[in-house]
Image 1 (spheres, rainbow, N blue to C red):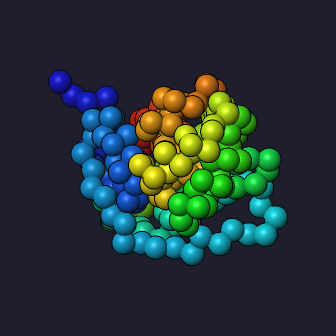
Image 2: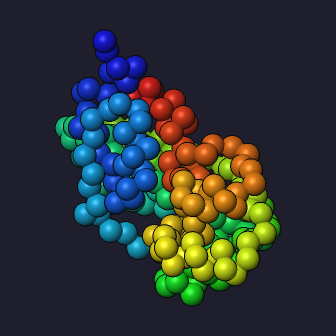
Image 3: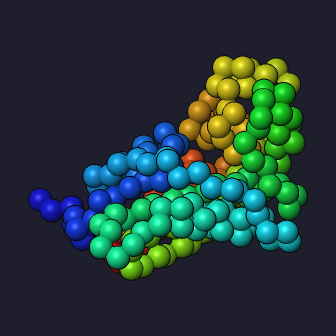
Length: 196
């Protein structure tokens, strides 16, 4: 039985991300792909750019780092995710104290999660953003310190992974794609990949 994404068989699909969550989520689409994390970029954002536009902008920068030339058979998928609270971007915490501080800010609040994705070949590039909102229940300091100490969410925007303990214990609800909050809006990506 042919895959619904049989059109991708002419490409070498590459995920330009070291995120194990993105690797897992892309794997849900039943396509063969490799991972390439050897294209570091300067993630400086232009002054005045709205937080909602940052992830798509960064996903395009990551795509451009692959320098796809005519005849290159790669189809590259790059992405970036941010958590936005009160108009401010919460990135990845640099240590456990910063992670706990972010979770105290998110406790009992609703935040926005935006993932920007770019799909590139030598002849075409498509970018999009997906937006979800996440509502946290109030968290005690004991709960925050338990989560940070046990799960060490230092590689996650906003200092949490919805697929971990905190998602089960503290997230009251989401509006939008659950997978987007994990780091890759798989349904939107699937729809884009069908066009290549």
